[in-house]
Every structure is written in structure tokens, then in C-alpha cells.
Length: 198
Image (cartoon, rainbow, N blue to C red; front, side, top):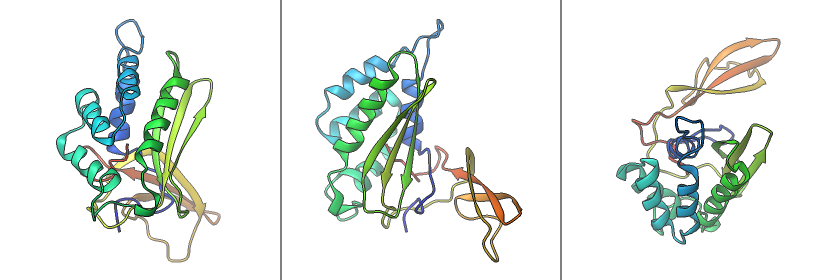
């Protein structure tokens, strides 16, 4: 199995880097890198150009870029979701839409969520304080996997199952009472090659 099981949301390393870039503020409190990034994205027509922008502006490492290309975008035997390709235009246009909706006042908060459906789409949700971008895909195929070890500000509340463990490779159970368990989602940190969605 790949990095992320179905149904468990992840910020992802590249989403985190993109969010940090578009939410960066100067000393006067203005988003100072967002419009340059948006202008670069608008000129992008291929996944290779997108990767170049991510490396140049968001600090994506060559290893992270290679991972993203190999498993998400490139025509290779390792690429995930072959029957749903190309997914790059969906992610690309979703990112542009999120930044446009955020304008110069709202934060952008991005996530990747593998679901059981055979679907690839980007959902954009706008509130008075932020724009949330959720990239939906099926679970990843075979690829490098790594445990999520960093507690994320995300929780899953669900029915307690018989013989339920206290932890999995992507969550730690914080509480179980009244037939309901509260799980703290764990995410990847930048030192791992897991979940580079973006």
C-alpha cells in the first residue's frame, strides 16, 4: 500500500510548503509572495513547469519533486491512478482557484484526502476567514511508505471498534468512551518522503 490509507486526511509536505508560501506576510501584515506565485502558476501548462515553480518559490526539494512527478504526474509504471490521469490539470486549476478566492485577505489551508471512490477532484471551500482546498484521490498505489509521526491539528471521531488498537500508522487514539473513539491524526514531517501531495 502507499502512504495514506483511504479516509485519512493529510496536510502533506508539499501542501504545507505551498500554504506557507501563499500565507507568508511581510512586516506590514500583507501577503507578500502570493501574487508572484499566482502569476507563475497562471503561466504553467505542464507538470514539469509546475514542479519548477514549486522548487523555485515554495522550497520543494529535488527529492520531493521527483517523488511527486514519479507517483502523481509522470507517465511511468509507478504512477498512481493511471485510469484517472491526467490529474495535474485538476490540482493545478484547483490551486489557482483557491488563491484567487483567497485574494489578498484570506488564508489558504490545503489537504489531501484519499477516498474509496475512483475520483480525482479538488474541492474549494470559502469562509469569512480562509479558503480550504481539499485534493481528493483514491488511495495511493504501491510506493514508498513511511509512518506518520507528527501530531497534526486534525482529529477523527468515530465508533469504537472491538479490539481497537491504541495507535495505527497514521493516528493515535486519544480517548474512547461511550462507544466513541477520538483519534489524533498523525502527519508526515519534512524529513520523510511520505505524502507529498500538491
